[in-house]
View (tube, each protein chain N blue to C red):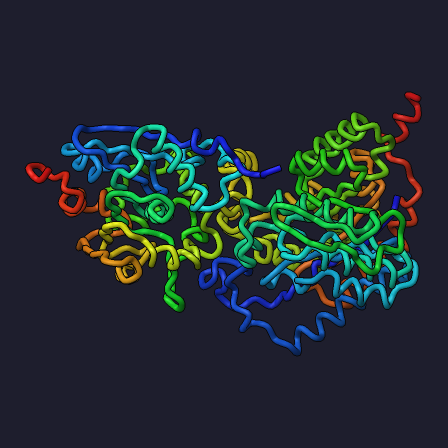
Amino acid sequence: MKCYAFHFMPFGHLEEGYREKYGSAWVTYSNRNWDPAVGHDLYRQYIDELVYAAELGFDGVCVNEHHQTAYSMMPSPNVIASALVARTDTAKVAILGNAIPLRNDPLRVAEEVAMLDNMSGGRIISGFIRGIGAEYHSHGINPADSRERFWEAHDLILKAWTEDGPFAWEGKYYNYRHVNVWPRPFQQPHPDVWFPSTGSPETVIAAAERGYTYVQVFTPMLQTVKVFDQYRDASLKAGRPDPDKRLAWHGVVYAAGSDAQAEDEFWPHMDMYFNELFVNPIHRLFPVNYMSEQTLEAVLELRGNMALERRRFDELVGARTAIVGSVDTVIGMLEEVHDTLGFEHLIANIHLGGLGEDKTKANIRHLATEVFPKIRDRRSARDRDMANEA
Amino acid sequence: MVDVDAEAAGSVVVRSAGSGPDVVVVPGFVTSGSTPGLDVLASTSTVHLVELPGFGGEAVPAGIRSPMDLACAVKGALRTRGLSGAPVVGQSFGGWVAAELAAMAPVERLVLVDSFGLRIVGEPRVDMFDMPRETVLDLVYADRSKAPTEWGAVAERAGYAAVARFAWNPYLCDLSLPNRLRELDVETLVVWGADDRVVPVSHAALFAELIPGARQVVIPDAGHDPSCDQPDAFARVVGEFLEVKEGVR
């Protein structure tokens, strides 16, 4: 198993009454609330935290992309990845991922990721995402075009990385007379491509068929079982063996001296993440045509109105979306998740909300020195069963 | 390989009602069905109500990417029905399509009702795509009880999703439309609800200014859809202009 540290890098200082005034911390939450002194210090803190995780032996560090929101200070994940590349030696730097449909010039993504791959000597993992609904309001990109833009940009970037240029690209959304990206990637034929998602079958199957690693983001364990099985089936159907090697689980992981201490220290920040920073009204999370209106109805029926439900500690931990407790509790829960799901990549969010640097680093230390050494070499129950059957 | 949809015209649905001279109506996004104002109009004319591709809930054909493409499909559909050149009334998003149609194929007369298509730089507008779906009809109708549908079922708001496809950004407009409006050679009436909160009445004057010889009529106590808010006034104004009012033609 490989273990990664993920950071959302929030600006966790929300204006009093922001929900009534702006509806959420996204799109229209005014940037007059940006404080450069605080922001500067947070960037230093957050980058230090990921570098610390790499120093203590995490296999990789992960960043992602969100726009015009206090939820994240990483509108360009590649900029943060560049800082991480410069300060780490052997850890992978995973960009999970670039929201390629939001770019009007996907060759910029091909160039930036290829630069990072060369600068790091081949340590880049290149995730691609559509971007969440709110970002289609922020960037003026038509959500109706989102899927087609994603795939056309994906195909273009992969071709730009792997085929000799120059060549012409004649597409629906992107057109180039001369595609000839310098530099080409360090890794051959290209950096590993990962697809992070909340479980849309289209994305799961597409990742499986292409042999891409699939990352299930912040989802109850039992729902994830179905998604991972779908990935396995589609992989085997496509003639790609060992699908478990390309499955990644992404959740919140926080360890402290005792269960009670962990909950006391971390719940205020989980609460800020799940009940404040992440919250979006339905029309922001699912703008018209981001998915079909029929699909949206089915999703809302299945998941309830996420905008209204307040998330609770026992519910989030019970579902194993968050794993919080003493070192032993965390080890036990991670073993359970690993046995139930069977995956190769464990992606742990080591910080949420406004968690301070001392506590974040203590969490990283617990995970790197006490938790991961116990579970890193284990085989999942699923893996053992399969070996026995064979 | 040419990458357009030759079947687009076949995906346009036209429903005809009433008797008398032909009037083609391209409705807005709230419903592809009739409205009280159109019912009154159908008492003295044959109303051919156009349902644009995608507005009935089926997928928009891949080759249709703009209101101009829609107008092209409507042009073909009208030709196969012997309605080329008939007077056209376009409401809301349908007004934008009707204006594009008139620019590519001469029509006898053109009526633009609370039409999308233009932008007045610096004039603030509510973003009807950035609000809860259930509140959009409150924006459209001066009196929501006059709305012809409650969008209770998903299929009923197909037009809203379709409009978002064509008008997300730039918002509800095409920056090159003024060029085509200036060259229109069609007798045109611009009709507007005085209290339109989707496309403010300032746009009526702009359409009338751009289209040579166009006249404008503003209907009081009406929002974005005067054919529902003020059905009789709407039918009278439009009927008189098209000369399909009783005893006129």
